[in-house]
Amino acid sequence: MALSVGFWVLAAVTVAGALVVVAARNVFRGALSLVLSLVAVAGIYITLSADFLAGVQVLVYVGAITILLIIGIMLTHEVQQAGTPNRFRVPAFLVSVVFLGVMAFVFLQTPWHTAPAGTAALTPTAGSLADKLFEPGGFLLTVEVAGVLLLAAVIGAIALARDK
Image (cartoon, rainbow, N blue to C red; front, side, top):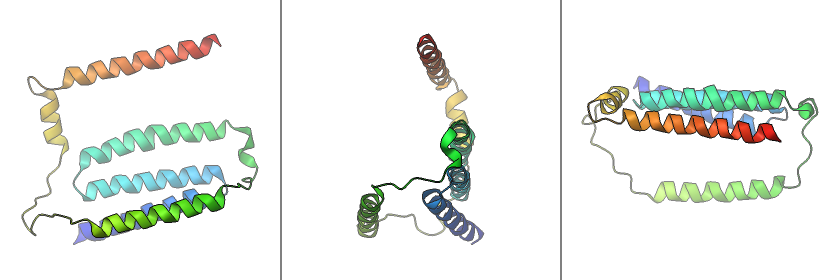
């Protein structure tokens, strides 16, 4: 019961934060509302017993992308000015309403298959993922090679940008 209440409270916080992101006139306040929304999504993952996804959500989205966004906003000179009117506001609203209608239709028409009550045990996922990663014949080498390739790509991008 407590997990259900926590889920719905976090879902309401997520939606409220997302609405503030869209409606905020100040870009910096919108970015802070995005942080709130993303942290609430991590909380939703915890209530669903997906602790690995919650950790990735906090590390990648809240810790990296949002901080990068806030730094970019702080380095922009036009942040102090109010938002300029946008001629795409009405078409964007109409597309959003159509998208919401399509998503609601799909959500209501999908036959959702769930486990019977009391059969699904909520177990943490990070332990089983760690076992798959670190066991003999696991995927640790693959993850390390991907990290080295991404580092090489970032260094190459910096070297190309530096020459200009």
